[in-house]
Amino acid sequence: MSTITERRFSGARRNRFAMISVGVVFVGAVSLAFFVIPMRTWTEQRSSIASKSEQFAAFEDINDALQDEVDVLKTPEGIQEAIRSQLGYLLASEKRVPMLDVPNAAANLPTEWPYSVVTNILQVRIAQAVRNSGVEILNPLQP
Image (cartoon, rainbow, N blue to C red; front, side):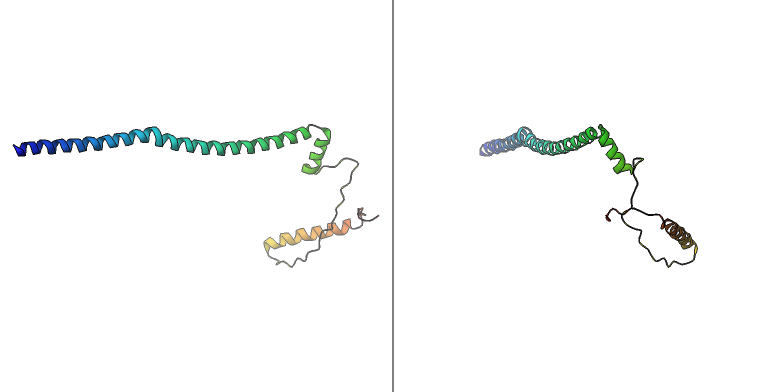
């Protein structure tokens, strides 16, 4: 009889250890599902919201700057300044005055094909500079 009772107790112990291990796995899965995963998702969402808020603030700054530029361009003075600075236009009564002369550069180039074209362009520029040297240009630094 002792072997039968020993078998019953050993079977009950095995069942008890199996139930305990299944219970621990179940409690672990439930705690993972209800606590760990939502907390990780919450922290990821919090960092994502923070980065999106920074991007939104940067976009708001850009939009404000663009709106200021649009407001300036709605005025006649703003339009005139934009045309002057971006397109280089002058009024009919204005004259463009170069501030610096074009520096003289020595051109000792070979006579082969690609360099012959450059040499011809330089000769034309030199001839044009000689022709324009007689034109008086106002020097804004002189009284």
